[in-house]
Each structure stands twice: as structure tokens, then as C-alpha cells.
Length: 187
Image (tube, rainbow, N blue to C red; front, side):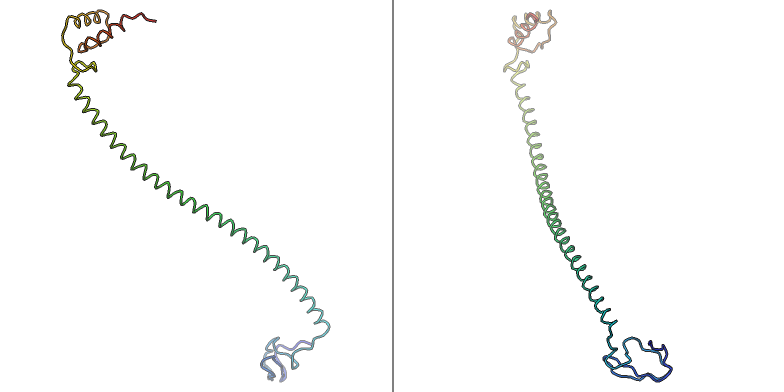
């Protein structure tokens, strides 16, 4: 029979660690940790059956938790392998970025060097052309200037008559080549 919530008479109850204690009438029941008999309630058939059910349920729960732990361990191992693979890829990509930056810096330095060399070459070529012009005043790319001669005057007259393109500063050899080109049969 269940105890009253508030004792109507002085009641002695027993606790596993505190021992016996008498609760006066009018005091509230202290709860299920206090028993009516020393050493606790006597276990009956209903309690054994319930304990067996509880034990079976606990075993089933342990099995379910063990299975879940195995799944979790497998998932963790899989995720760990994927993480290690991703970390390796990231490290490889970081190295690729460092190499690309180094290559870009080297390319920029090389471009600056090549640009400076090109500028020097252009300047040198311009200077050489200016010096060459001093040795080739007639512009025929053959050293020496044009000198007036009856042969040169005759070639200029023929080229003018043919309305060919030429430069009067050219030497005899270049004027003769221009005349040959102007009078050559057209194919």
C-alpha cells in the first residue's frame, strides 16, 4: 500500500545510508529513497520479472548503441581519409600557387630585361642607320653616293618616260634594275 503524502502519525522509515529515522505526524513523506522496512523492500515475483525485462531491454539498448558506435567509427574513418586526401590536395595547390607566383615574378623580371634589351637594340639600330646614311647618301643601300653621269641621267630619263617608281638619288646599278623591272614583259 502506498504511503500518505503527509504522515498522520509518527512514522519510522529506513534509508540505505542514513539508517532509521522517525518522521513526526504532519511531516511530508521524504520520497522513494526511504523504505518502510530495514534493508529496503522485499523483492517479489513481480519485481524479478520486471528486472528481467529491464535487463533484456538494457541488453538490447547496449547492442543498438554498440552498432551505432561501430557505424560512427566507420564514418569517422571514412571522413578522416577524405580529410587527409583534401589536406594533401590543398597542400599541393598551395605549392602550385607558390610556384606560379615564383614563375610570374621570374617572367616579369625577364620581360623587363628583354624590354630593356629591345630598347637598346632599337637605339643601336637607329644609330647604325644614321651612320650608314653618311656612307649611302643616295639611299640605294650600296656604300657611296650617287654621282652625276650621262649614264645615270639617261636611266632617269627613261624611268621618267615610263612613269616608273624610283628615286633620283639612286645609283646607276639600282636605276638599271628599276628600268629592267619596268620594261620586263608582264606575265
